[in-house]
Image (cartoon, rainbow, N blue to C red; front, side, top):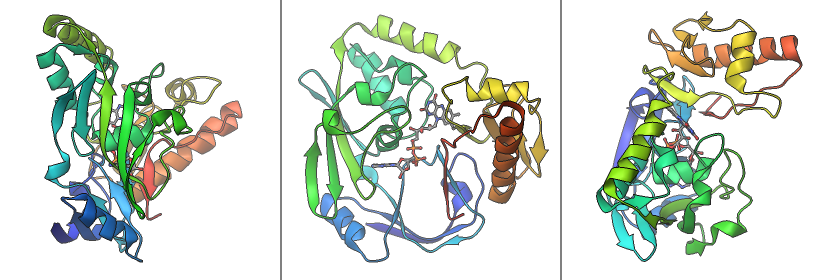
Length: 279
Ligand SMILES: Cc1cc2nc3c(=O)[nH]c(=O)nc-3n(C[C@H](O)[C@H](O)[C@H](O)COP(=O)(O)OP(=O)(O)OC[C@H]3O[C@@H](n4cnc5c(N)ncnc54)[C@H](O)[C@@H]3O)c2cc1C
């Protein structure tokens, strides 16, 4: 198991800000993972950090990120089995190569399979929990297999219990052709052209039932609003970008400002999709 000390949070997250992680552990087996989960210090679990922001402080609670042995893909009957640390992009490349359809809607969503399942990542219409057939996980009591239909998943919520780490999952995919899968992935990527390219954590807020969060933020006239180095993207109002060396404090202040102004203007409360640790 690799153990690192005093790791800058900016190197672990796509928002590229935050303080220092006192101890980062990368377990390579279920046993090592279980040992960390059972330690009295508790833990924060990290995938690729594309939906996570660490506060501008030292995070003393150990952070666990699955090691490279959890990064694998194999063919199984009716789909693919992939490790929790495997990047979604890599799974999509395999889908293209093997001509397997069902995951194309995930194109352009960064992060790991474990993170995607925890967040039920996807589009407004579909989340990855609709594709997963079986989840392998480790918690304090050991390894277990989870039937996804037993989980209370919903919009941007995988329903996986806190303290449970996804180590692998089986994705149910249908046979297609390389050309068709590639074409559908390109269609989905095309729809993402309005997304900013700089450091961000993707959509900051969940869409409330009334209207898309980005539309509300735009209508509140907040595009381009900044706090320090953090800015509401002019391309997509639900993105906050780290424009000029933003601190996590800048990002948190901008999130609070947006929530206040959208509530004052429309009476609608926005809820964060991004996970803020150490605030
Ligand atoms: C440019 C950009 C575009 C994005 N577009 C979208 C989009 O269209 N749709 C969408 O849904 N999201 C989107 N996101 C957000 C983000 O990519 C997803 O939420 C992604 O699935 C998070 O994966 P991650 O590995 O980075 O998770 P992290 O940010 O590292 O963690 C997110 C959550 O998952 C948990 N977690 C991580 N690994 C595991 C594991 N192995 N087992 C259990 N829990 C785990 C963490 O504890 C945390 O609660 C976007 C982000 C960016 C930067």
